[in-house]
Length: 413
Ligand SMILES: Cc1cc2nc3c(=O)[nH]c(=O)nc-3n(C[C@H](O)[C@H](O)[C@H](O)COP(=O)(O)OP(=O)(O)OC[C@H]3O[C@@H](n4cnc5c(N)ncnc54)[C@H](O)[C@@H]3O)c2cc1C
Image (cartoon, rainbow, N blue to C red; front, side, top):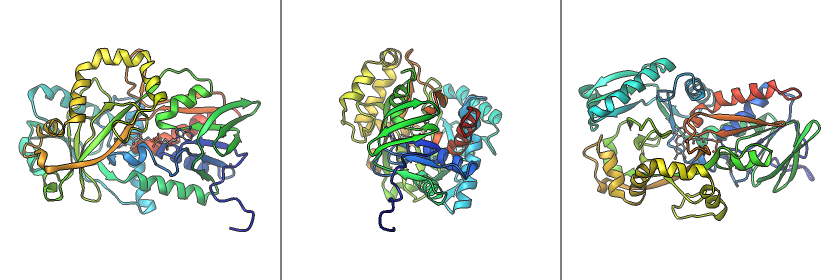
């Protein structure tokens, strides 16, 4: 660096587009904009000390194929397109990704209708290679899994989304964009044809902003003048790991038939690229948006969760489910018992503690857990207000959608 030159991550005072959040969605959006508009200047502002520090760096690493999502939803469209784009991107950029496949297993008659519905959705969404298999075929794919019927998805795969985030950041650097860490955005205001973001390292003004702030997206949307509805509530997802000598219990990924009332896919077993088998995640409503430790409580976070009418409506409607999650969250035996339904040989002695992530889940004032991706507008800004799983899989397709929306705005793009 020549004397007096800015370090590469110094946030600019002026640029064309400001992206908030260097998770995989923000980085993919910034990279898409930089590719489409090579003459435009793009700046990414990130609160954490590193990129991918929150959901992106704490996921299951599954490239979802698009089975679960209601046909015609954004999730269905962007997951199928996004998975295709993700495999292509990984190949082009030399990132290891494997189409290892997965099974979704019904263990009881009462789950067959749910499996039928997933099969119907998968077909409607155009999921490649999806096939119904019986108990014997299931044992051929996953010798230690037990079920009465299953769906086999050969197009489901695994990747390390942090590798993808790093690759997107290096693409941005090569395109002359900045990615500034330790740069928490505190305020957003507009004046004339510009939008100004005040942050921990000064202020950056642009012609447009794209806010991809994950668990903090509602706060920035409100700061920019949007409705407080929906609010983000943090659901902690904890994992266990199989001991190395028991990893042969799982070849690829084994998932349950999910509860259709919830936007979570249920606790599963997944073999990662490094051969580790992760079990989980649980889904426990917690007291901080960064509750990587179970008992972390942040007064502002918990106050915002408890003062939201949707939280109480959710608690009233789902208290049984909440109690079951609490049991699993606190007891390794309950956690393992939930998975033993479809891997009967699994015991509590086979597992050791794993990592934990926190899902940014949007909750409506009416108590509904928002299922689909939500991107909304304020003056000169787009806000990604709900991007839970499979947003990591879908990020490249979601980024293209965001770039399209930005170009629709006069004076932007
Ligand atoms: C336990 C778990 C398992 C998952 N498994 C999968 C999976 O297998 N497959 C899949 O496709 N998806 C999975 N997901 C979902 C996926 O991880 C997320 O949908 C995706 O990472 C969302 O990316 P993001 O960029 O929106 O959010 P994040 O990665 O959370 O990034 C948001 C960023 O915004 C920054 N930020 C927030 N506020 C500010 C501010 N004021 N100023 C500046 N920066 C700010 C944060 O620091 C953060 O880095 C999982 C999620 C969890 C939690």
